[in-house]
Length: 221
Image 1 (tube, one colour):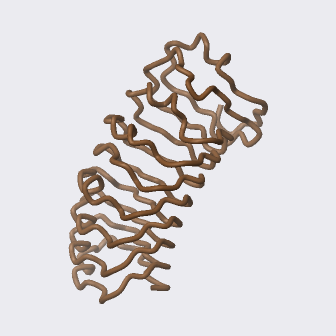
Image 2 (cartoon, helix red, strand yellow):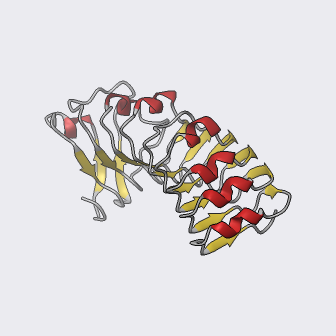
Image 3 (cartoon, helix red, strand yellow):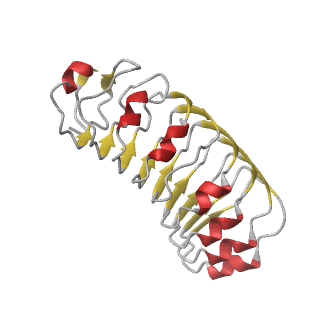
């Protein structure tokens, strides 16, 4: 049901008999709202793919998702979600795609699945340092977009150890310090955006090893 002109409100009643639901796609239905109770427990427990981009959810991160441990793909961009990312997201060990762009999410980035291949948290109010421990475990991470937040601290040294990393956009934050020399080990890197931060020091010589690099933006530092 993606990219239609659906309108109105989705409620608990719409899902009452969908006990075997595994895929649910309603992205880009701009007049559609999703309203369920805070303590709602859905009849389904094997949801794997959920796409609700640009559907108005509002309020804090949906508590009912805590019951969906099989999630592989979670996309809730531009959903007017507020508050902080819950710590229980770390229990989603099968999650490979997480897209939460363009919400009103604040607070730090919690521990996330080490299986993530795409992580989009851009255009929020997320603060604190980029969590080295969590990020360094994401060996299959290809797409990382944390731009337009309030992240601080240094760039993680393990960025270069993410051999699958293709895109890294960390622009428009409050990141300090140098670009780590290990960045040259990210041989598949095609897109690196670090502009509009407070990065200091020299461009590491090792960056010449990123032979696939097509976009490098380090302006306004």
